Structure formats: structure tokens, C-alpha cells
Length: 486
Length: 87
Image (cartoon, rainbow over all chains, first blue to last red):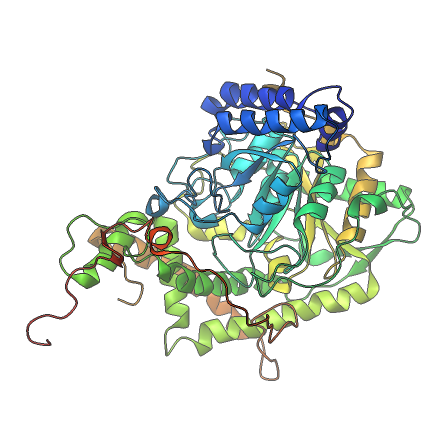
């Protein structure tokens, strides 16, 4: 299906096309595409059909329905749902059945959305390619031999291929924005604290944030309106009013200042990506925006800073997988310590184990000051870079990823090379600011390229408006891969 | 080992190599002067978040134990923790 969330919502509410028909379309697309893409970990067609019938009955009886009534959606499999398993694409949670729904799941379902299933990811959201999944890699709908990005690669691939109009992912260091870029769709990481993390399986707790994938900015704004807002069950969820993001989209751009940081256009940037992003800046200039040079001097340290903070937090968060309370337990432990060690060794994949080791090392006495504490101080400097920049400009424009999607397997044996691909996305998580990736062109080989816009804390309204303005002037976001047409 | 993992010998070899490369890359942080810089553990200035101290109904034993890999009645089952000498 190529319909947008807003189109589906309007068709259902005006009784042109019922919820059941949209859900059947989504199920048919999943059945047809899933053998090639492997975007899902689990899905439940019967449950979706039942929920769709309920929506249609309410509408037939002219009863009130929510703003997303009948819209088929998917959520990343690190978001807890009472239905189906929640695996984090890890063997350690293979049979885990969450006892509660995540806050965002409650919000979506209260709005009438129909969650069809759970999407594939890098195990525990650790990776940028969805290759680190115990369920096997997801494939990019634009080129099946390539990665869809990650860690929310399943959600991005599913939306791009037309299984569903929108999906949720999580972003700890770029895990929404980068797969959105690689799959040619729109992906938003909100400000840290904007969306409750209650029920999101923790990776890097000071960095994690849930956000939407959609075919365009309007749909992403609609989803954010529904999932954002205070929730006392996440003490970092911020208690400030949620604007009507969709209402602000059509304000004209005159006088908007867009920051251009040369640090984001240096060594390692693919020339085709550079060209597409610079052309996007020209679109903004013609739309009445001013492009202003700015500096983010600590950009070169962001990868080291991020991977120290993220792995330290991960090693602590993943200590809960002990083979006792839930998750995989080794069959024949030598003693009680071996319950932990063998269960974790068998349950976690190699990248998760690497990150646990790195984080444990960075936090261990003797290395704490040199690594973890040092990273927290550099984090302050990176945050200050943005504070200074946003004194001069409204948003910052840059590439989402330095290259188009790579071939599956190409980087899997070189973890550092993989980490370096996160150079443009991790800073936003360190600073807690919102970022959005929107499609801005294709490489010569036909692979999608994403433009990233970053804004100050809680400036989602502005970010969405500026991103939407680009989509008013371009049609990259309307392109779909061949596979979607079927 | 602090990580509570049980790497194979082959893995110890591979991971030491990969992790040394990564740590060497991290070492570039040492060139940043941070003598006057306070650490940031949290990106937003949110602190001391309180909620009303009201009683809630917690998960019952069946819900809490639903995902337990080994269960013994209303308890999580674990191997003997104390051996003869330390008992």
C-alpha cells in the first residue's frame, strides 16, 4: 500500500474504505513481501482482523473513534506489548512475554490504531544495519542485497516497502534517522523526554527515545501528537504541553535560518550524499530560508563519546539478564555463577557481548576517570556546541549518514568501521535534541539518501514545519521501491 | 569477570583485537581539555522527580514469575548458592 496515514484515517472516518480493508491490504503486503525482506519478528493477523472489525462496527454505529482508528501499524520488537512476544531480536528474550504494554502502545491503541506486529532490529538496538539480529538480517526494499540501516531496520523497511503506512522505532544513536535515510522514508527522533520510555527495553537510558517512521512529515507529526506527553512511569518524561504538530506544518518559512556546519561535510562523506544534501539546501534557499555557516567544533569526538556513554549504560542495563528472573537460562550450569555467565554467553549475540565488555571496562575502577567520566565531560562540550549554534540558527541541516546503504556483510567484521557510520546521528542523542531524516535524493545506483535536520530541545514543531516545507517543494518522499508495487 | 560472560578462547582472541582497536580510537578524547568542564550524565535539567506516594497493586506471583526459566512454587529457582565450607 502506498496510502499515507492521513489518507487511511480520512478514508475510514468518511466510510469510503473500512478498517478491515486496510488491515487486509497490510496483511496481503506482509504475506507477499516478508519472505524477501524479513522485516518482522512476529505478527498476528487474526488479532488485527478482530480489532479492525471492532473499529468498523463502531463507525457503522456512529460511535466515537480515535484519531488513528483502523490504521495498521507496526512497532519495533524492543517495545513491550502484552500480545505476542517481545524479543529485542535476542535469543535471551526468545520466549519473553511482556506483562504490560509500553506507554506508546497504550497511546496508539487508545487512538484506535491496529498494531499488526513487531519489527526486526539489531539485537537490543545495538547496531546500524539490522544484521545483529538473532532472527537474521532484514533486507533493504530498494536493493535486497543491502542493509536497511538500523537498529530499527525492520520498521523502516516495512514502511518503505508498503506493508504499513507508519511504524515506531527507537533511537539511541541514530536508530530511527539512519534507517529512515537508508530506506527513503521520514523518521523522527524526538527530544529526550518528549515520549515516555515506559515499556521500551533499555539500552542507553540517557539516550534512548521512541519515535515515528512514516511516508511523509505530516504523518510523522500526527503520530508524534499521539505518542508524546507526560507519563509518570518514566521519570525522565517531561511534563510540558504537547503542541498540535500537524496544525503548525503549513506556516511559511520566511526568515528561517538554517545552520550549515562544515564539520558535517568533511572527510568520509560520500560525494553523492554531499551533492544531494547541498541541493536540498538550495531548495530551502529558494523557499525563503537563509543558510548560515556555523561550527560544531567537538564533532570529531562524538563517536568516541557516544560509544563510551552508550556501552557503559548498556552494560549496566543488561546486567538484569541473569538467567533467573526471565529470559534464557543455560541447561546445565556448573554452579550459581555459571547460571549468569553461561546463560548470558549463550543468550547474547557477539555485538551485544562486545558492548557489554566495553561498557564494563569503561566503568571499572582504574578506567572510570579516563573513559566514562571523560566521556561525560566531552558530552557537556558537545551539548554546548549545539546551544551556541542554536543561538544563531533555527535548525541545522546535514546528511543523516555519510554513505548510502552498504551491502549486507560488508562491515560485519569491523565493528569500529560500523561505529564510524554513526558520525552524524549520535550527537543529537548526547545533547538530547530532536532530529528528523527526510528523503532528499538517490545515488547513481538508485539508493536513497537522507537529509537530517536537528533542532533545539522541544522544537519538534519547528523541525516538522521546516521538514514539511521541503516535502512541499520536492517529491523524493513519494517515491517507492519497485518491490512495493508488486 | 565483571561482564559475567563466558567467552570461548577464539572469542577472547578476536574480541581483544577488536576492542583494542576501539579503545585506541576512544583514546583521542584525552586530547580534549576538560579541566573546567562538568560532566553531563543527563541531557535535560530534570532532577528530583516525585510522584504521590500512593499504594498501587503490584504484579502477583503468577505474573511476576510468568517468564521465569525455573520456578519452584512462588519462588525463582536457583542452584545452591552457599557451598559446604561457607555454609
